[in-house]
Image (cartoon, rainbow, N blue to C red; front, side):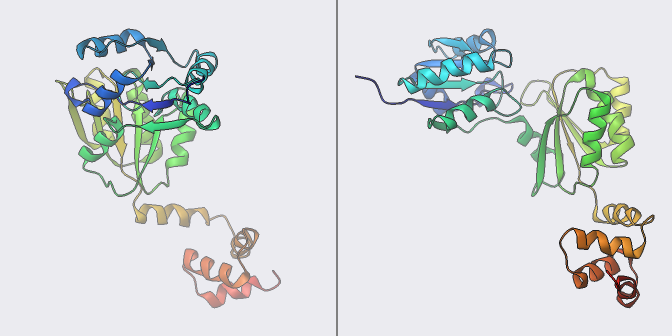
Length: 283
């Protein structure tokens, strides 16, 4: 008789301090049939530390397709599988994202356990607003694409969280200075470890710091969103080369009626509504 379908457990592991692993995660790792790990050499050290003896299988970006299908097959045949990354929550900037998608497509129960996540730790110690934020993960390693991604974040009002490797940190900061201008920033490294460090200041100050210090460890960069005042200036500058009539037509093309478009244009261009209305005749 076939066993019922198993479960995929997403088990976060410590990002530095081994004491941060939860009792629930330990119990889950002890109870599953197999553990899928990003790097089995790294994970075996964790398991040995907690005296957990379970079969390991590798699951990483280079074997996503073939190994993902094998793992799904095992779960469908009744085995419970724990997915772990090298550090932190699986499926966040991690190939586990694909395995979760595959599991959901196959009707498999997916259970995520709470645990350490570098992005949230860096956010809450940053001193920047935490009520609304976006997570961008790693930006592109190529300069042109990275700058395009930063241009798309230029008018973002929410706090921005970005991951970066040590050898690209300074390049990222220089691009941020060019595109995001003056912003408050917090850069965390070695979170939960012995040499944990959080730098808080401006982008300029961060550049000066890491010009003189060789960046080490994995970094989480937290940047404040644009202020409403700066956003208003950028929005206003967009209309400098546009006539009132073109501005009105822009909103009509977006689905607004003429009355709504006139009101919005008058507000954005800071001119009387009557003047805008005159320009809208014939549209």
